[in-house]
Image (cartoon, rainbow, N blue to C red):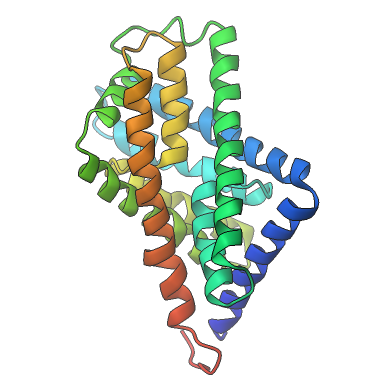
Length: 258
């Protein structure tokens, strides 16, 4: 199979995404909100597993492996995730099928939708009394504080690493024809960034929203500080480390086999 076809597939996806935003923004926003919701509820499960399995030798392994379920749900339901769209729109723009300005517009719209989704899930958990029942030293709250109190450069580079891995997972999934294979690729590759503690801006939205509504000690300005630098890092990771190289190493005239 010529890998060039997968570049074209990714570029076509970028075009379809922008076309949906342009012609049916309500539907696009809904897809973005749903992605933020899916990722946030899986994220809450991740922090709960970290808390409950902290004395188990492979507790972090189990929790990190579970997180890939979030990206799997997003991919299989056609929801819209900001971080993977960094790759898709970079490919379509590199191929000349969308402009970089259009890419930026879509990223902003998707980011806002993801944020709304994270807030909805945090609000539901708050309303259910779940966040209020967590102790102040819960892994969720301590994790939020740790993420927010790192140097800007550290957050930025961890953001690059996080979306490099996430977009690699999505890029590899493009080659999978079997759903089971796609699920395994998504879960196993996403495991890398969770286990190593990298910074994913959309996941952090969920963590920070839950902490702010619950018993965490996180301040809003500290949460925004993290999101600024993790978001910038995510863009670089998805665009520079996956999207552009993906298109560049598979030019139109390249008929080589992988």
